[in-house]
Structures are given as structure tokens and as C-alpha cells.
Length: 345
Image 1 (cartoon, helix red, strand yellow):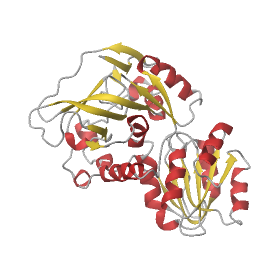
Image 2 (cartoon, one colour):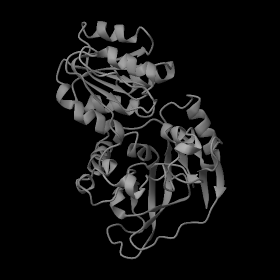
Image 3 (cartoon, one colour):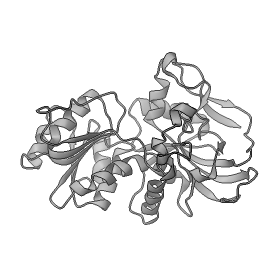
Image 4 (cartoon, helix red, strand yellow):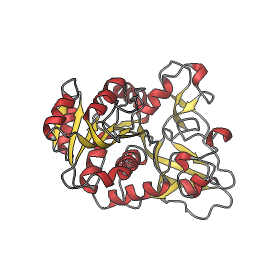
């Protein structure tokens, strides 16, 4: 089968042919219908060899949707032909966090060397994906696989971040979204459907600011040295009640902190390496700074329910599997508006 693999440290991903997996007891084989491309993949491919925690080659892709093709012995909760989304953060399934569906925070993942598909385990940018347990599969019904695949991360991650901030987003409040790309443009939609907050989007790209407006941002302004001052003006000097940074680089977290007011939820979602100093006097009173990771299995079901209701969708650009390396280059160069999705078949 064809697969897109990161094969050598510092090299671009390649389209290769590898054996089609065979499901063992308790496993499920999916024929992949769509798989998303994410900045997290680029972050992994940017690591030096000594920081990689898993061997190469690695089949990429942690956002996957497929049709059940084969069942291993003992699997009875899904059937051949079912269209399903893959919950990405795989845990042990038994610890206190996994027991409530928070496998993204599995307490034993590091110890047991459990990795998400595409981020350590073989991923979804391939013609077939082997899933180690059917509990990681969520039926999608009649949803379009192409726009559903990104919801497993680009939808789930901002949903988890927004959901926990909802108590602050009362009528008259403001939410700032920094980075209106793959995750950010979904966050804007989630904020609009889940809260009455005014939504201000920040980005350096005019195309992405236009996308932000098209999906519901009340204001879309350039992310530069004047951005925080503009947010202050728009909020009457108060600052935002919630700030979501989907870039996470040093310049954007600085802007995020400057947009914050008293008791703000400041959420750093992006993995750009930036950090915010926390201490008395460094931020307005009682600002809560968090750095969440992905979301729970239950939250993925909620995201898909929102998609079924037509409340959230992902702007996608599609590529055949042979052009996946080009998609990664376009993502690296900031040329993807929304989410790039690979179609293996």
C-alpha cells in the first residue's frame, strides 16, 4: 500500500510502498478515506535525532477517517463497512484519566511508550490504518469524511480549550483567537455557537483574516505590535475574558498576555515554543494560564454532534496521496487556508 513517511531526520516526507497491515486480535483495519495534515507533524520533523522518542520511518497523519475494512478476532463493537473517525491520543485505557475518556492525559503513556497514530505510531496518511482498539473509533454516519477528518484534532483541540473557558464567556464578554488557521478558524465557529462572546481574530495573513470573518469573527485584525492595543480599544480598555493562542510562538504569547484582563483565561494551544511569565504583577490579577493537549473521547463525540447539526465545519484544501509532500511544504510556507486533507484513494 502507499503511505507517506518521515524516513530520515531533517528530510522531507516521502511517498513509499509498504505492506498492508493485518489486524490481530482486538484490532481494526481501516481503509482510510481522508487524513489531515497538521503543524504538529512539522514540529516532529523539525526535532533533532536525540529528541525523537520513537524510531523512523514513521507513517504520518494523526487526523484520520476511514471505513472499517477488516476486524481482528474478538472485535464486535464495529462492523465492516462502518464509516468512523479515529480518536488520536491513544492511552492505556485503564488509568484514572483513561477511565473517563481522557486518554489525551493518560498517566502511563510515557511509561508504556504509547504514541498517537502519526506521532509515534503508524499514522493515517496511508491507504490503510491499523487501529489497536475499537474504543478509538467514533461513527460519523453521513458526515463528509473529507471535512470530518480534521475535526479529530483541528476540531477537538479547540473545542476542549473553548469548553473549559465558557464560564467566563458571558454576554458582553470578548474572546480573542490568535491564529486563524487550521485550528483557529474552527475555534471561531465554536465560540460563536457555544457562547455570546464577541470574537476578535488576529493573524498575520490577510487571507486568514478573511477566512476568520467568513466563519463568524466579529473583528479580524492584523497580529502585530499594535494588536493588543487595538483589542484594548475594542473592549473599552478592559481586555478579553478569554484569549486562545493557536500559534504559541514567543511574539504571539506576548500579544496574548497583553490582551488579557483581570481573571482572563489565557490558553496557549499552539506549540510554537513561546511561554508566558506567571507571577504577582506580571499579568493582571487572577489570569489563569493553561496549555491543554487535544481533548477527550467524549468531547470528540460532542464535536461530531456539532458537525451533524451543521454548527461547525472545516475549510479544507485536498491533495491526492502522491502530492502529500507538497501539502506539507505548503503548510510550512503558510500557504494553506484552513486545513490540508490527503485523499489516499
